[in-house]
Amino acid sequence: MSIAPISSIPMPTIPAVSSPSFTSSTPTSTSQTVPSSTSSTSSTSSSSSANATNALASMNSNEFMQLLVAQLQNQNPLNPTDPTTFITQTSQLTMVQALQSLETSTTQSNQEIGVMASSSMIGRTVSGTLTNGTPFSGTVSSVQVTSSGPQLNIGSSSVPLSSVTSIA
Image (cartoon, rainbow, N blue to C red):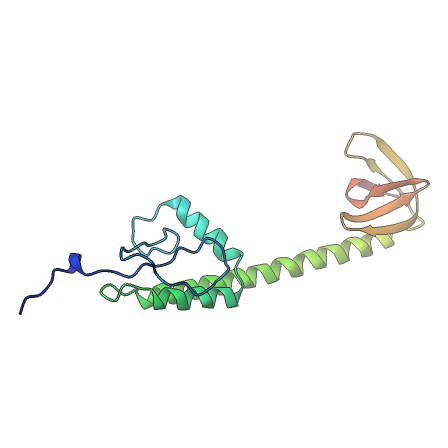
């Protein structure tokens, strides 16, 4: 009985994932291909690590789980991936989701604070400088909330809240 060397054993192809769309694919080659963004070797470059981080940030939990299952199904049986790698990836996904939630919450709070601050200026005299360097001063008659933030209506002009430097 002879044993074939490991290098002569055909290895399944691991499909490269270029975007978070996942479909079932059948390997078409007998050579092993490992995408650099999911490689667990220490030779991963910093740029591929940054790309993997950006890809992870744009994934939702369902897409991540589909990728995790694809990795498990297509891993090299002679060199399986370390389970701590999956735990690390899962914790990174959880952290990214928590940070995205915190960012959304903070943005919403800042918008609400801006609206409250703007509405408290109605009837008060404000002054400041526009982004083009033009000074302004006048009494706020109303506030308009736009996608770029609160706008104070002073006379016939609309001034962004961020341009106000003093309130009288």
